[in-house]
Image: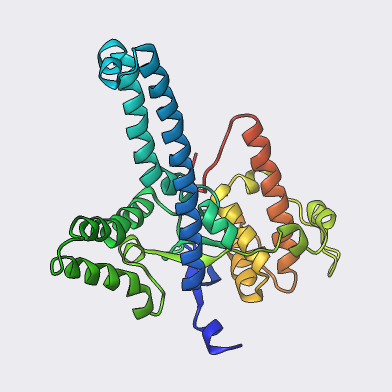
Length: 302
């Protein structure tokens, strides 16, 4: 393994004490993901701007061709369009990242296309506060200095402090070993590579996993509803990540943690078959619950 690749390896320790190996996303990949997201936001805002523009143009024609007449004769419609535009601006700046990064994949469309995601450095769930902090800091890192630079474009002196500010934050990921933005440092997050391999391909045999029968030992793993009810969607995602990564040490740790929770004797040598069976049966239970309108976010949910 090259030094560059090994320098990106990290270990997340979950609140249950399970060590989950991850790999930090490269700086180039992060830049590419941000560029894709900004393009998507720009296209969305352009479409909304054009739609509202066409709407105002239609109102102007109905009012005699004057925008001033629109504001007086169609005051409510005019105000509604302005409010919609302001809301869309806000959602484009904050709602886009908040919505996707708080989702089950912890990734915006740009991050998903480039194969990366957000992860909490403490191994727990991404919180709203974390996602808000890292995205609000983006304004301090990029937006404010850019606005100041453009507003001072004609000034040959005053724009340089803003340029230095922008450069410092732009280079910040190059001066810490975890490739953290200032927003990541404040929020307590990492940006890591998301496994591209589908879980079905990582499982030895999906049908065998569903039946709970080990190919190695022939042991059959069946879990009661009470044993499956211990965990929720967050733990399912953690287990899915461990199976995708297929790292023996992580599977042993997760196997022991689940067995302790169930009151089983962990044993040794058949960890993957056990985890495959538990994952398949837990997923089936949670999906059945969602079809009935019942969701269990994590083990702490009632």
